[in-house]
Length: 168
Image 1 (tube, rainbow, N blue to C red):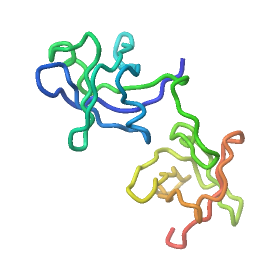
Image 2 (image 1 turned 60 degrees about the vertical axis):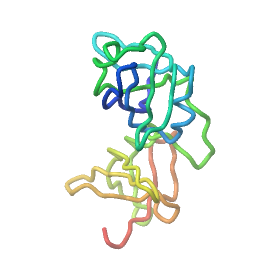
Image 3 (image 1 turned 180 degrees about the horizontal axis):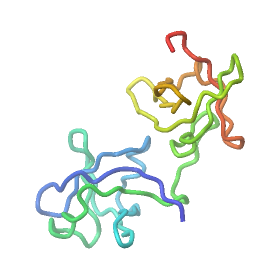
Image 4 (image 1 turned 135 degrees about the horizontal axis):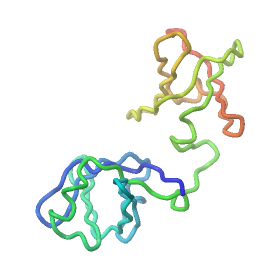
């Protein structure tokens, strides 16, 4: 079963079992709804939980889980990742992609057809996402995910063609 990260528990909140979650999903209001199921990635085995309550608070989402209504029930999960199973992922339009689909793609310079490197990370920024490219023998390259730069994404072939910016 494939799991996909949607947030991280960064702390507890109060004594009634709420946790502060930093969302790492483009769909926080869809992912963190009452009765939705999540997976806490824990050792020795993952824990499936169901959301009992959810509310926004500053830059966090405050969540409590069914049968975990006390700080002692949730304190041990500080720093743990929250995931969803593949069947709970939302359908995307043709020009949208999940981060896990993009990370690992081979990046090809559209002008020269040379391989630049691979996407190692995606940085979510207010204007647009930025792809971090691990370039062969060079420092990391930062590419904005905008139409003028990323001209083609082919998930089947595992590559993306880009127009490099002149500053690079």
